[in-house]
Image (cartoon, rainbow, N blue to C red):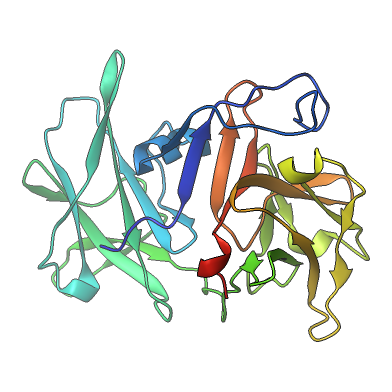
Length: 275
């Protein structure tokens, strides 16, 4: 299974009470940085209970729990002829049974997933399956419809040999029909009309005016801004008509433990490694 594409980073930020998360000196410094596992991502995403499968980027997140103790949970898919069993990971919960979860990657062109769960060796139908289908043998399968993946994926931010970085933004619903705010609220990409977009980040003291994005003359579906950035870790988001929105192209996130909000995170490479 390919690596989980959501690279989330847990950070301790030394906030100084500024409204945009900046310190008194206008910068944000990471004191502690740790690559999170899928388990920690579930915590960030607020998944604490078993429920219907959830599509996140290129993955389907399956969850399972039962009142009695379970030792092993796995899943098998019809398109694999139920020959391969994918084992769930268990997360212990205080005074409750374990929460089992699995991030399963799906491919472009797949429209549905049909599957069954295996709990301690017993094959069952997912009680949270959003759909069900009975096969010719009379076996009930869980069924989930998959959204169409974007027809293209933009590399963003883009690093240039002159030390500048291009940040891009788009409301194209082929990329994402919804945009995620720093408070993890989903906003429809179609709800914005002639928006004002500004890049805010640790590199600008979270200034909401310094780096406005302009419509790309070569592709009017995109907005962009190109700025100089030194190598290292930087944190940012886009201010879109007053909404603090995470980068829809770049799924690296940082989390503020004090305020509970997210920001996008990017590591600018040394110039010798840039395009």
